[in-house]
Image (cartoon, rainbow, N blue to C red; front, side):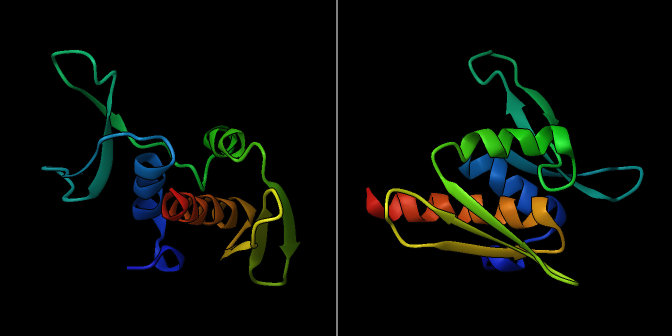
Length: 122
């Protein structure tokens, strides 16, 4: 699966994992059989406390966390008729380009791609 094909909960889970370093697990509800992602909050505690992964690409409050993570990147947003495109640059490095159904989704994909670029530079 590529970053460009991630959607919904899978995109949110990868953001929690790679941008914020959370331990993420998929859980299936016994009553609804719906699959959700949770992360371990306060990992230093002996007893795990699992909470739902925020909707980074769908909630303005959670998207702010991604925006803060992107501090230092220049961001250009191009709104099309059906898709939105986000282009990130930093310190003269190459462009990181991502698309989504809306700005927040495109921005989250671009941030996730940036983690891959940063990891490959280390």
